[in-house]
Image (cartoon, rainbow, N blue to C red; front, side):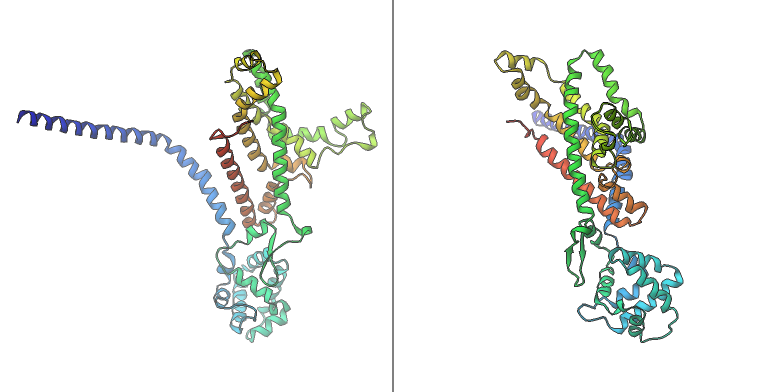
Length: 418
């Protein structure tokens, strides 16, 4: 009986100890979570919420449902190819009259004109003239004001814009549009804007990334081979551009690269080129590549340097002592060990490149601008925030996909030179 009682006490004490350990573990996790709460709130407010807002703007379509509710209701059951009934024309007339009173017809005209150029004039003219008409028949009255009201394309547009969400901004971002029959078609090659800009952004960013690797790798390797004091001093020179405004650095490149700038003057002075045949180094793709390579080079050097510092020089000496030539030992032994640095630096430089704005804007001219410059144009000048949000979302998703690919390759150690 005493043995049973002792076993029971031991079991109860064991259970109590386990509960105490679980409570201590919960308190530890709660304490750790409370320390990260400010960071989580910061990420939520200043990163996730703006991304969610950007995505919503890229599909939101509130203008027509909000300012033409009668038209939306009248077109609910209408389907082409026949023209809508008289009730739909009457709904348009009443909505435009109401929009004129509330001074909102400009928003209607702007939204429709974003999808079908010429709609701005149609809505403004109709709004002004329909106010002087007191009674129907509205179909004849609207067609008399403008023959487009007898065109199915106009009603297809209104029907399509009646939905509170739309994919129109993404279609425009991929240079697609609706034709007169309501089918999705590609823009003619001479009218395509965004797909060529995306292609240009990605290939120029890839080239800039490659150039930073070619320039940064030897420099990082040389820095690791120097004594610590000298290496630290030169590393300050690498970091020095971070202490200078990006605008100042880009302006300096304008001074260097312009037609009568420092570089061209030196080429003429050295009789490498004639004064009449100065090379065009700025306001084109070459200017963007040169300036961005210099601006982003430290972002490649730093990851490479941090990885190379952890590689022991004895690895190369061991390979050479076993009979390998220095170049082969460097390629087969040293370079594979630096691939994580190349991957991290390449990913960082590439993602920064595709979203760069100031440098392409100042030195890129017409042929050297990136998709970010078109996003800024839609935000600041054309005020087409939906299209800007769609372009920004595509750019964000592209960057995320590149990160996933990098993580799959480098994170699992799959990158190698064979």
